[in-house]
Image (tube, rainbow, N blue to C red):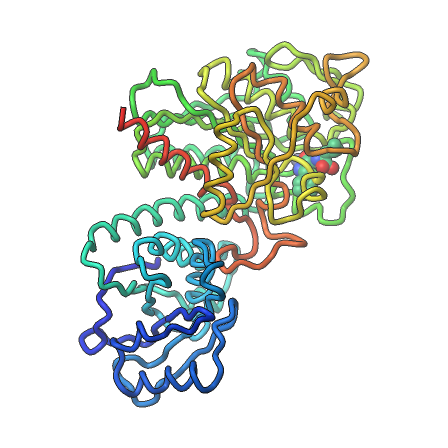
Length: 504
Ligand code: BES
Ligand code: MN
Ligand code: ZN
């Protein structure tokens, strides 16, 4: 496991095998010169001023300094235009540096913050390093190349004297990225090792380790209280559905909570409305919303946020069989509304709707955030790098959008106007579970809005962003597979909310 420590850039006392230096297109490298021996200084000067290292974003050069004991190599990272530099650029460049260091089998390296105001960068750099070194190798029987080349220690080179504050920032980044990597680990599990029972038991173990209270609803319990949406979708599989409810009580147990709900379909074949076989394997990632909720609960607990948060994971496997629910079925949902099933592949909205209604009735939350790999239509609308955001919580939407600029988890709002509700009216029931091809991501959200009982709510459709897929742009800190998308932004929202609470 990699550790990041703060150290002063005094290389005569602390020699380094590899030092990462960021260079903007403006090529201001003077700030590094004072720390370097004359040999290193000359090598750097020559490369930047004479040999045309441009500092363009995405470019990098590994510069060996022969016969220099203080610094054996400099890794120059192009940072692009200074005006365009964001925290997400810092995160990506730090991640890329870590991957380059791993590539050349370094077990440790040093890195300067990219911007003058060092504190602004520390968190993003730490996140970039922790996230990029994530690697899912549970199923490799031989040690992989990566397994043999683990980076153990990164020194963050600052002359800032407030070391404690910086260490605390790194500690927070570690707690958050550990939670992201935990969500990734579960998201990446193959469906044969991740039935609802297995996934929920991973969640329960986490809850025990992190001091969260947990309740599990078994199928018979869901039947008896009328969670018929979840029970119906789960009927076709021999692996019974389950629901996990986690609770973080950072204040009093009767404080008005925040409610998180995550779509947790361990595998989505489409059911009787069977999906085509092409890329069906990717439907193991249909549990990612729920995995992110698990990660979020872990993070709020580890960060000891003084707020109350409830996380609900309705967990099913969507399979075709003689016991499956069918097109034409009408389901009486937990909140009493009736749903005509016209496509068993639109299963996510059905299980989410029940879980949301259950959360609303049981906890009367102040707001609801749901995360779901809900529609292919959201990918058609926004591509594989942006989540669709739809909902009624005006302030929350603004806050998430703003935070997502820093986190790099792009979210874009789609409207939820009356016309869209018309598309899901049913002739025989209150609503139907599909609204036709047009505006498919929105009609899915319109469906969910029937179950929020007027509580401010935001839905994030993470179908395009929950894992790396066709059309995903490369980011060093998102290795192949589940990404944990949404966790960092939402945890930031909770951190802001926690500060508010302590002021009043
Ligand atoms: N899990 C899928 C959505 C999905 C598809 C996510 C592809 C990521 C990539 C969801 O359950 C689903 O099948 N949705 C259908 C809804 C349709 C039947 C109205 C879809 O998007 O095709
Ligand atoms: Mn489906
Ligand atoms: Zn699905």
